[in-house]
Image (cartoon, rainbow, N blue to C red; front, side):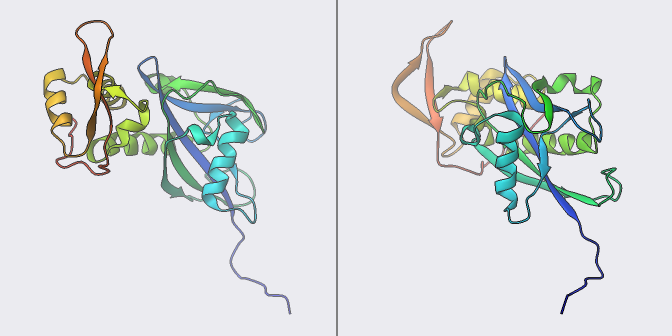
Length: 231
């Protein structure tokens, strides 16, 4: 007996909001589509989930296939939202997207693969000049807000720096992601006074320009009490 469902068959995709800092700017990874629909337009990396594939596995696979970036370099991964508005994809079948936010420190230059004609890092401040395929502008804006609010309540900012960092480097993350300047002394007081957020690396000082600065690593805290608020 063949079971016939009265419900339509949906296609599922994984779309990725991949963020990193490059030259002290918050950048998102975009691909130029090499196939229809929207051939030649910029879009978020992503693609269809295979029939017997877990959603998170599809996200990591698309990261590697479309951008050439090793998933091991991504230190933060969070499911963002599901997008299923009818007509969001012009193909005949209805397409529902599960979107993910991926973060990483010093992520390398991408290499386009799969059906992407080009892969490139684009500063978030330049996005007002770009039109994205599908509903990817909405997904990207949601992903950016998730990252910005995440810096307020969690230790997410440490995903954008290396294993050891200075407070100044961490402040640069907050300034780039939030898009606002922060008072250095006030910021240092807050982050060093937040329980288990930062742990000093014993005997280590940064020897960059200016006075030597203490070096820290991420502490065990995942939730910040009190949170660091945007202006």
